[in-house]
Amino acid sequence: MKNVRTTTVDLLSRLPKINFLVLSPGILSIRGRTETEEGIDEKLALHYYARWKFIHDLLPLLRAAKDEGEDAKVLTVLGGEYSGKIDLDDLGLKKHYSLANAASAAQTYNDMMVEDFASREPGIAFTHISPVENWALRPFTAILSMLLYPVSVSPGDCAEYMLYALLQGESGAFRRKPRAEIIKGPSPYGEARQSLWEHTITATSVDAP
Image 1 (cartoon, one colour):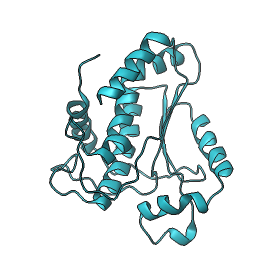
Image 2 (cartoon, rainbow, N blue to C red; image 1 turned 60 degrees about the horizontal axis):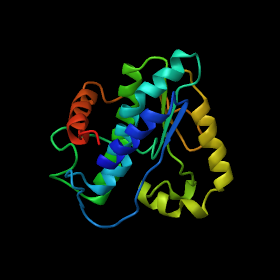
Image 3 (cartoon, rainbow, N blue to C red; image 1 turned 135 degrees about the vertical axis):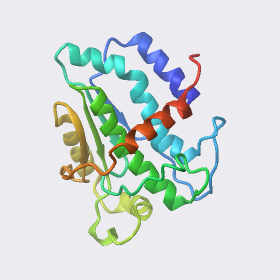
Image 4 (cartoon, one colour; image 1 turned 90 degrees about the horizontal axis):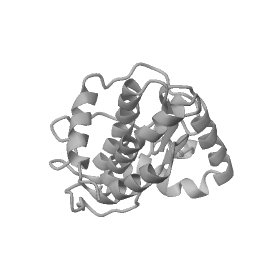
C-alpha cells in the first residue's frame, strides 16, 4: 500500500486529469497466506486492496476529467462473473484463508468496489470484467480458468473486448462477462458494501511519502 501511495502522490503532482484508469495487477501463487508488511495477504493486496487504493487516491484526477465534460472511466480486470458470498466476520481472510477463498473474495470485493465507488461518484463509470472465456473450463474454478487462459483465447480478441468494456457506459457500476456482455440482475450485496468500505479504508491507510 505504501508503494501505491507513492505512485498516486506522484501522479497527482504531475497530471491534470485521468480519463481512463485500467487496473489489472495480479500474482499467480499456490503459497498459503503470505502477508505484506501491512498485514494484507499478497494475493488480496494485488487483486483488490491495491486496486481500491489506486481508484480512491486518483479520484481527484477522474473528477477533473468529468468536470471538463470528458470521459472518466475505471476498468478492473479480474473475475466479473465468478463472484461469490462475502464473510463479514472475516474480511481480509485472516481466519479462514485458502486459495479458493482468496480467489472468490477478491472477485466479490471487486464487484462491491465498483458498486460503492459508482454510488459515491456520479458521472464516472466503474466496470469489473473477467478476461476468461472457455466453455470447456466452466465446470472448474476461476483459478484453473486463469491458468489456462493464455492458450484458450486470442490476446487480440480479449483486448478488443476489454477496450469495448472500458469505453462503454457514461456512469454507474457495471459487471461484464469476458466478451463484454453486461451481467444483469440486482446487486446481492446491499449493506455489506459499507462494511467492506470501512474495512478497506483501515487496511489501506498509509502516510503520504
